[in-house]
Length: 330
Ligand SMILES: Cc1ncc(COP(=O)(O)O)c(C=O)c1O
Image (tube, rainbow, N blue to C red; front, side, top):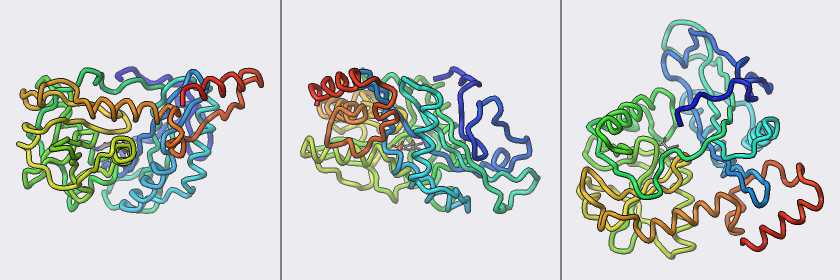
């Protein structure tokens, strides 16, 4: 989505809730120059029937964020539970009734020249209404990038380090200019890693295959959700192993996963159709199951959801009606 965010939206900045237009950082801020920040991307989905906004796996996102901040010696002085509460309150203060993208970002905040890091840290959490990241309903055309994925001993891809996203930005830009919807990156050994902003799965001979957590990827939370849904709902096992580029050309189904894209089918790779060149059957089912789970319609996955309003904004009669409507859906 290209639209600029509304500056009157409330964000959490320097320990308080404030309008975005008041949340400003200085031009010499360390992270702006050297990329020394770690961010997260979290989704919340609005369920119109239940009149509820569900934040998807916020605890796991905040756990990952804090762990990865440690790589850059950034301290976020709050627990994942406290961060979840702040995020829900942020959504309530903005009275959001729409799908959201939530962006926590912790960074080295000293305003001075010099690359060495010190212990001046800051963080903010912003949330903006956000629809589909990529229109993937009918499948995407992905292209293998000429840019190589950064590796663990350069900038660890498992952490969402701000500076590392120049790698994703170069690959995305090249892909879009070449007419692809998304870039796929190889590592220095020529194996497939992931998309510029998402993980990758293929289906071969009845099994899901995805690069391992040691394969220069971000260990995606959507990846984890999809592995669980595939096993539990479709009896599909996932194998984590190196993936050769040419396997993308001969696999039965291919899809991408990520907080922004959800489960996005890929129907063409490098101008070659994936199997019949249409959305794969299992991919379509996984996409739908993930969507239903994220919207609070599958009881088995409610454990992933933090309800923002918990009925607090509804009158008694509406609460009962919403519960009844929900019961018919699950
Ligand atoms: C490079 C990269 N890989 C994978 C993902 C998917 O991770 P997640 O499912 O946790 O959003 C993302 C997005 O966060 C990403 O930026």
